[in-house]
Each structure stands twice: as C-alpha cells, then as structure tokens.
Image 1 (cartoon, rainbow, N blue to C red):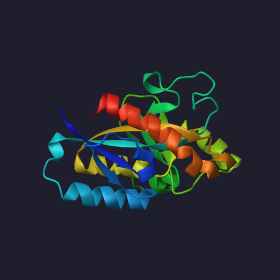
Image 2 (image 1 turned 90 degrees about the vertical axis):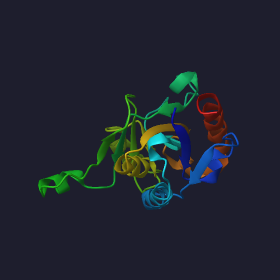
Image 3 (image 1 turned 120 degrees about the vertical axis):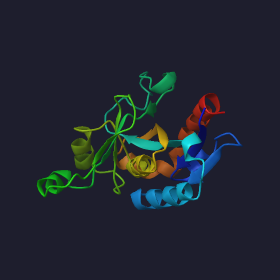
Length: 194
C-alpha cells in the first residue's frame, strides 16, 4: 500500500492530523502550492510508493454542501468531500485552445462527481460564486496546482476537502472557522491513513 504524503496549504488545516504522517505545508495559492510540492517530490526517490493526499478547506459554491442542513458528504461526514475533477478557474482556457494549445485547465483525478474550482482569488463576491457554481461545487486556492504537479510526477493522488465557508462574505472568517474543518480532516486521516 502506498505511503501517504499529506499536502495542505496552511498548517491550521492539518493541525489535527495524527502524528507520524508526513506533511508538507505549501503556503496559500497555486504558485506556492506548485513550488513547494515540486521541490519536495523532486527530492524523493520513492515516488512509486507514494500517494499525495491533499487535505484542506474549501468554499461551497452551492447551498447545503457544508452538511449543516443534514446533507452528508464523503463517508457520512458533514461537509467532507472527495474530489474527482479540478478546474483552473482563473485561466482563459477557451482563448488558449483557440490559439491551438491545450491549457489543461480541467484535470480528472478520481471517480467522484465533485468538481473543485481552483484559483488565486479568495472568493467572497456573490457574482464570482454564481459564475463558478455553473461548473463546480467547491472552490479553493491550491487543489489544481497539487493535482497538476502530482500528474507531472506520475504520483497517485487523493484530494479531500472540508467545507469551511460558503464562498461569500462569511469566508473572511476563515481563520476562526478553520479549526472545525481541521478536526474533521484529522479524523478522516486517522481513519483512512493512520
């Protein structure tokens, strides 16, 4: 069984991951995530025996995904979702395709129907939320970069996100909300990776 490498944007997101699991904290945003994970994987010789497990928080682009209204996510945990597809939402993929290039702006990483949109925009604007909700259920700032790097290195990947907010003005309370998500993510890691 492959050994897990936990990858998260912020230390607060993995504060309750069991001791003994390898953790890489990348920093916030696609550039930081891609750089930190690339640097880490480039220094390893055991990539065939590794699975990157991206744990983190995400904003809900649809009401009810936080599980607080009784809807369950992954494994019956409120607000916990395994990602099947990631989108790079702040690249103009159509324009790049029109130029004859593949922007690889949509990466399939698993069988789950849940789509995560990733961009370097902290989504708090209802207009942006509505636009993204047409293509995805969740939004974050690192998932796409982690998936891109894992695919480039040929490393297996799982991505599990917990809804911390509704990608609206309440998202600015992330620092106060993250520990709830970190506890759920830590329990998931203990059950599935420990």
